[in-house]
Image: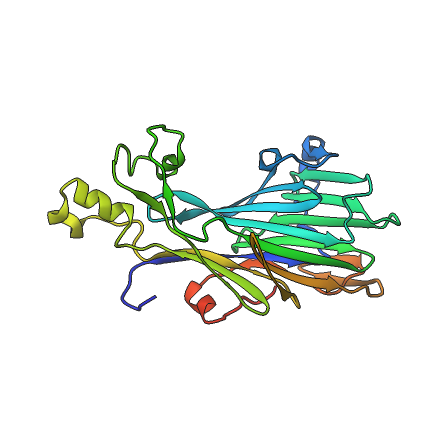
Length: 311
């Protein structure tokens, strides 16, 4: 971003890895919430069967479909040229050996701890658990995977905005132009959903959307409403707006590109169990390595290969 630009950069981090510290407990005064936890014992059909997780201004949809964990990500302010509030993308997590194919599956929305815990077992009965949660003070989404035996985790960032897409105008309020709210209501011309920028490095996958202010809804409406003479008195909410993030993991390495995105994969090695302190919580754990998916704070530095520090 140029120094004289007045704009906003909204970024975040998605983290995949092995964590040993549970979310901070708010105390026994909230124990009564546990009875309202939502528990599923079968996988979902699609994203319509998902559980919500939120923290700060980030919202997630979490579900398991086809023996894979999927997470939709959204954040306030992630708007495009049309004024549409878009999802940041989707993360797909594949575990090998797969803990979801041996008849033991549990997905629980833990209200007091603000997370979704997905559990399964390996062929020999070894439990595997994945906790999905978001930080409040920082825009970071965590996917923490725990197994007492070696397991491979492959995390893939997926986006459907890989090319510009023309939004059809069929006259229905429920068509794809509906995402633009009233910005292009009854407009007979063409409207496009502009593509994101996705770049894969050796250790992370970066993604961002930079609003093209020459084609944004503000510019369109000023011309349509004949407000050119007072343009400078108006506030453009899309001016220099950039948003996005990065999929990263400690010691994760790029595994390649799939037909739905880029993938990073890392094999978690088994270590002797010991007690340690992380983030103020002390607990026994077997896997020492830690990894995360992070949404970054500065897209320009991300574009230069900058990587957010692991907590």
